Length: 265
Ligand SMILES: Nc1ncnc2c1ncn2[C@@H]1O[C@H](COP(=O)(O)OP(=O)(O)OP(=O)(O)O)[C@@H](O)[C@H]1O
Image (cartoon, rainbow, N blue to C red; front, side, top):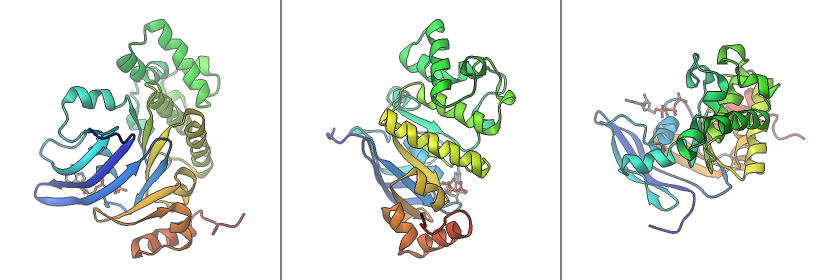
């Protein structure tokens, strides 16, 4: 066990059905850091996140190393993964509609992590749900926790998912395209929320996206993935202003076409 805190992924390889899908990926997220993984569709971003959580199909062949606070997670026993997954490491996915259970009230879903990882009782859970609903900016938090997901807007549902990820008090948040399904105004609000939570909770983040303009608000440094390999790494600002690899240049050009204003104040 090494003394390194945070997440250190090194030389990660993933093969499924004889096809090498990830080929030696290195990513590290130290305490309090905001790191991005950016790349086009199919480049291996989600596979990397799923590998960290031990959520790959059982026939996937994994190599390399994924250490959390110095503890190797690759091949770790289920009880270790269960503690880390949704506990010390929280996750927020792209689509709150599929991440949330349509048949359970919002409050119960927000506090599931706290009940599983910290044995919070029923009464404590309700107070915690309201507090977290307030922290993530849900309107009328005491009412919101009694609603069902379909009674909330898409942006509010994404706030619920973030509150649920926070309830077990994680130190690292894995975010997989958490704003892609939202319109640009709501996207901006959710990015603002994640940035604030990072500051107030000292939460580190590993943020996956195909959009460098989004990443500019969500991470300070990033690795650029192409076909399962890291082709470039550096500050997000530098990836936008002077990308070196063809992949980063293409992502910069795409960001210019959409929302990035070229860095003008
Ligand atoms: N369970 C699986 N079985 C076989 N191939 C898979 C599996 N999961 C992912 N892949 C393949 O691995 C590659 C990387 O997938 P991944 O989901 O990591 O891409 P991504 O970068 O997240 O892309 P997107 O932005 O489109 O989600 C793709 O070619 C995908 O088809």
